[in-house]
Image: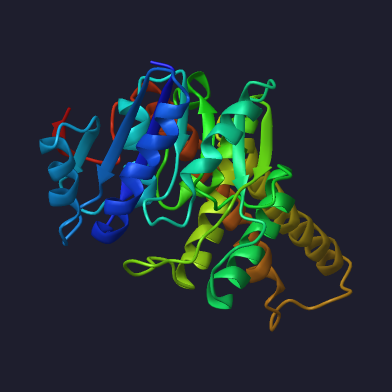
Length: 311
């Protein structure tokens, strides 16, 4: 299998009816073996029925029907896990991504890139979506050092080996290029078309900016300190404990020299508090180190549950 196209969908019955034929036409034009995988992420409308209707008509697609709405990251992970193509293309199912851009992404991959991200340089969305997205992309570039303009664009192409061992949860799907770049893979970017939403409702809200920011903080920790959490917490522990001991030592010297009175002073309490906080940080670091070791020893847990695979 040369190509796998994965499309997470959640309440997109109107869009899927238009998307599938266009996607099939584009992939047929490549004249290479491919598969189309639609992940029904717990839709409450007729999205699943529409996909099954395509199957009944003899159309070529695989449907992953998740037991409930697990979110886009988990749905995308389900698609990655079940894809067999050498190059895996992901895209949204709302018809805002254009299937005709897929050959452009594949062409960029063949230039020597491991991951190619789409850049919606003329985004057809309201300001309520574009402004939070610009903020998120700015923070993403500054935090990760990966210089792509549009990390939130779902239209991306990956070499299959890049996705091995990739963990997705929360809203982490937008940070996949950064996670892969950390492993040493080469990241590219191409401009892609973007269309206004015609069917259904957007699942994007301002709250996703805050969720995305928290996930970015989490990503930063995992990228730089996942294998050595004791260095982070231990560093803070040493800092606080040292500050407490220094304050206590200075107070003791001044008191013995009869230069100050500590009877009505809160400084000894502050010194003790700093020392105890430092000890707590050290303990947190040791516990985090144990948890990390347990995590890496057991990576069988998944963030989604498939009810049925229709092939």
